Image 1 (tube, rainbow, N blue to C red):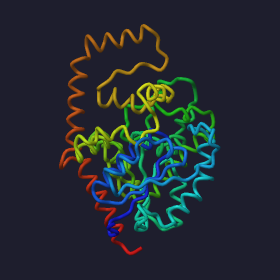
Image 2: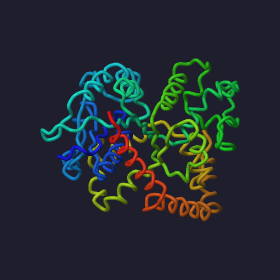
Image 3: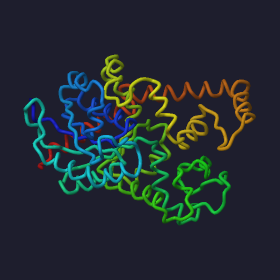
Image 4: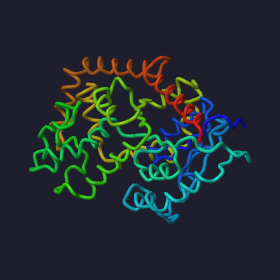
Length: 365
């Protein structure tokens, strides 16, 4: 096995919606010849489907697992126990794994070149500092979401949060690049607390601020679609890579085989389970606002709506907005397709990321 290639260790937040996109990124890096060790919790590793098929197609993709410290019968769902486990039980095992001699087929892999971690796995930043490794932060939510979280201290200072009353239609003006787009109702639920020192609000602030320590941040988005926020964040981070949509970027590199591999490495089985998971998730106001107001490919219902509101929106779509939305959808689709094609923004950023990882590997350890 060639040992001159960089070795990237990827650790996703241990939930389905975070594992799949980072697995796409791992496959893209392996397609470029890099070694990738993909680390899951024992629970998720045992549930992931058809990992052997992925390893067969990508020989430099390797899988490891560590304990999350939770009992086997624990639901392992998003909640305080999982977050506590990330910061306490998982951290020492992740560090120990990085310090060990990672192997594939009995052959010792090169020492880790860098870590790519989910933006929610903030303990990995401490581990990276302790081991002297570069760390790159991957963000599942919209770039606009992270940017708004980074602006939370400013919003608190300006008195825009916590809210002074119950009017959810008040415009939020303290997020540059989002002028005229945000209302109170669009902010995440943790912004609706009564005190600025509320643990949930402070958790969101601390988690987002931690990402400033990263060597780079990665977004599963298209630069042209999120440019206003990305241009502001460029002053906060050393580097930003926009690699979205990752599944489309992967398809552009490996062709139709990406479709046959897309069902591998999943925790959920069957469309009905996927829909149950989707229905259990809180609504994403940033996604809704972006789709409706910025990209103009959807219509937004107010927070508390009735049958008449739904009827009016559907009537508006069918009678007045259909052609406008169709035109906007065609425009967005072209931007996305261009971004993953050769020479497009996401394609170029992937090449830059790969080259930067190679440069990290070339530097003396």
